[in-house]
Length: 194
Image 1 (cartoon, helix red, strand yellow):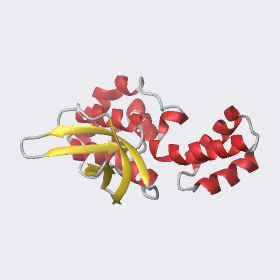
Image 2 (spheres, rainbow, N blue to C red; image 1 turned 90 degrees about the horizontal axis):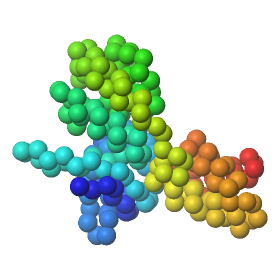
Image 3 (cartoon, one colour; image 1 turned 120 degrees about the horizontal axis):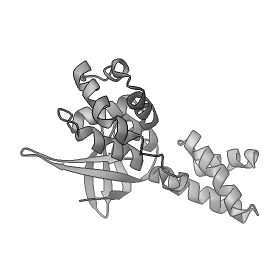
Image 4 (tube, rainbow, N blue to C red; image 1 turned 180 degrees about the horizontal axis):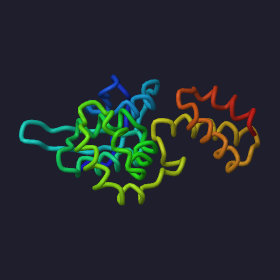
């Protein structure tokens, strides 16, 4: 129903974020992975998944599309609900989870709180072929949270006379490695690497 919600980060905690989008505050359930990417931001863009249950309507949000795709694959496995899928994605990064599934490492996957060995094995069996087709988003799509900082930093470097493609390459690498940096800090680090 909702592809993404973009707006001001009104409130954030390790399990949820409240995003003010045009005067409406959306309570969005998030993983620790997403929390670590947005906790210091003022404006965010979260890719969403909307779940309607008999007793609740829940909105889950993710800083990256790949995390949302993994969430959707996980909840497609019988016995795995939204909270369990979120717990899996809070325990392992998307890349680590893909590795665990592709290598069939059920004992490692069952380390997720509330996940038993049988469910871990079921996840691996059902998702082993599907996870291989997922790829990381390109740096430009990767994290809407950091795009504002990255865009401003690229713009500043272009004004300083650097080619846009060079500036983008360096800035996106810096922002990916250190998402908590401010625009000024990103520019300083990028200048050392150009």
